[in-house]
Image 1 (tube, helix red, strand yellow):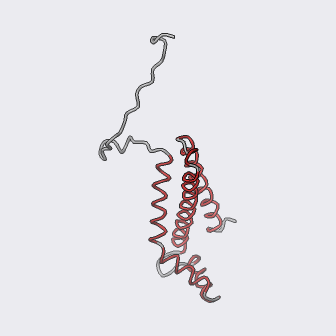
Image 2: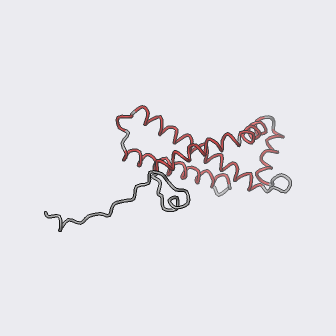
Image 3: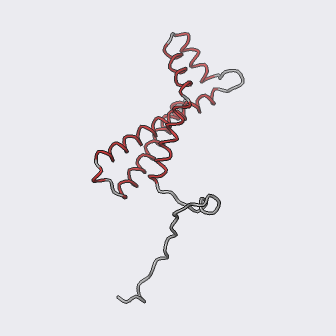
Length: 148
């Protein structure tokens, strides 16, 4: 086979120092990068919403009256804030927990089996994390909003 009959692929651009104004619009992150960023973001969301988590736990287990108050927040809301807004906050917590947990399992698996941690495995396991966390969140969202 001669060089003239071979088709050459155009060389992909290399981004070593990303310019925020020129390169961010064309830069395409791999799924493993998205999982890494979302792992950090989900940890931050869970940390920032910790007072809401503690309030939910406290009011749901204190007594029957406090549990009724707890469920009325999700149904009727509080003051001018409607109940669906609290459901969205709870859904964000559900997603953050699932994303953080599943991505953490992925990181633990890759740490324990570092000899099998290839670029292909990193991409496929990142896609599994994204699909599982979003799929489970969608299923739980249906339950939270009363579809089933």
